Image 1 (cartoon, rainbow, N blue to C red):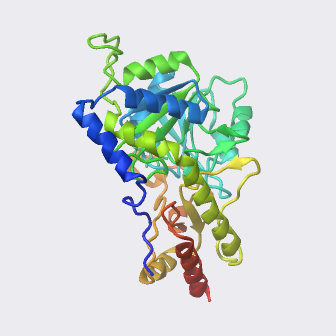
Image 2 (cartoon, protein in one colour; image 1 turned 60 degrees about the vertical axis):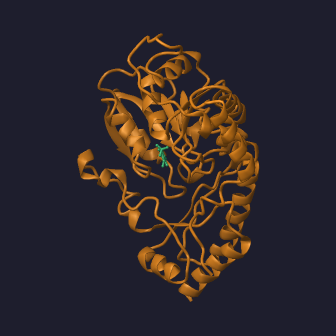
Image 3 (cartoon, protein in one colour; image 1 turned 135 degrees about the vertical axis):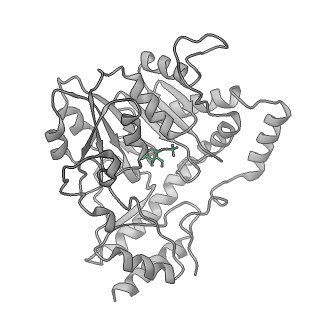
Length: 362
Ligand SMILES: Cc1ncc(COP(=O)(O)O)c(C=O)c1O
């Protein structure tokens, strides 16, 4: 059997409907702005339970605009977990703030609360938490840690569409939340895409302008922004996909349950800890093993594609010039392995992956 990590073609449901919508947009020369964009922003803010949604060109821009929107003091420090996609750190550096890396918890790979406490000082302006793999960060604990301190929270939800804590969507706990709609994401467009959510009108007003050269209307520039609009075609696709997104979470949760039940029988595999009252988007199903490269090769030889998120921690990238060692994440990139989990997989494929892993350890 051959199991792809993801099959982007199969991930696009309802292709007829999508083609017909695209045809319509082309017929009306409606490429930038318009009803598809407004509808998606309205639907996504409703879906996440936030007051405002601002679509942007990608998840990286979403983070950069989010950091900028908070008006942080010049030269302030922003804390970022080391196990994440590089954009989270770029948003800090590209805005001229000081990047401070924080360790991650080996329970669920999100920011480590003990190290976070150590990293906070009088220069700390903000923390970017990452709901990595769709695992919700313990937001209430984070809020307790920064209580009475002037520290802002940005939530990177690029991998966490639909992840919730006590029924509250991630991205709504801090000051601002950011999303990616990159094709491989749980809610993916047919190209790059991103979004920002916030409950603050002031922040939203800034973001709406920042994504369009500082203007809301033509020639109404109030400051120097950028071009980071999400186009109508992408929004049309996202509108169609969002309507059925509940099924995506359902399917991924079903596969995750099978993985958890079966893999717990293998003592050398660590899956990850889940917390009560959370809903997980299961963007990635990541296991931790000491013999990762050998297992990855064995799975590949048996037709199973896997990936690594991520092969190194960001503090290991030399150009970030971060010298301090972090305990939990040290050489973690050699042990992580992401198993296929997406709604287009079949139960038989998930069972085949488990059987192959069991064969390997036998
Ligand atoms: C955690 C995280 N943050 C930010 C991004 C950036 O999103 P984009 O690729 O849409 O710019 C990604 C995308 O991979 C991500 O996984």
